[in-house]
Amino acid sequence: MIDKRTILDERARRLAVVIGDASTAPSAVVLEVATFTLSGEQYAIETRYIREIIPLADFTPVPHSPSILFGVANLNGDVLAVFDLRPLLGLGLGSISDLCRVIVLGTERAEFGVLADAVHEVTTFPAATLFDLAGGTDQHRYVRGVTTDALAVLDGQLMLNDTRFSIDDGR
Image (cartoon, rainbow, N blue to C red; front, side, top):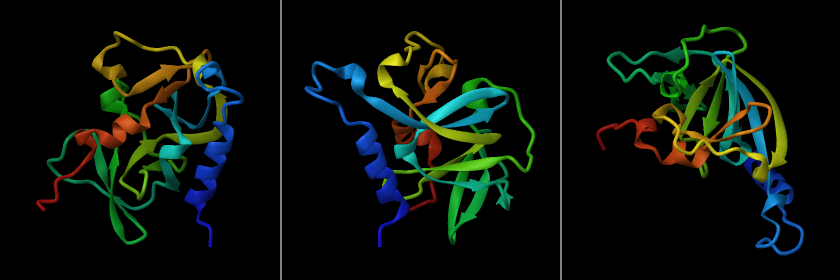
């Protein structure tokens, strides 16, 4: 039985195929991203880092935790840490609504979730069209680049490797 991750990985590989010699055609690399809103701003994360997107249902706030830890939720019997990126991105606080979603990130397994005010669509565009934010502030640390439509593409790999998004369970 083929799982969703296998299908998404295969789709990403097909979309990222470079015609001809990759060294001579870097502009042919295509990014597939899921777009979402945070505090009225448009963001995206590459779909290859997304395990699933779930409604923000029952979550439990964690007392005395860092401001970016929104809480924990149950994901198929496992405890999933849900982080709010707004403090890291210098955004104002948002409100919780029925449109809020948790974007579950991970490569081999679900590692953590990030809160989104709303999730919109999956879209593709050439990687070469991203504008670099070199010299940006710490608030731009997780932004891989920005499109001409002001869509900020977050660096999923950086987020997955950052210790800010891990919880020490004492093991």
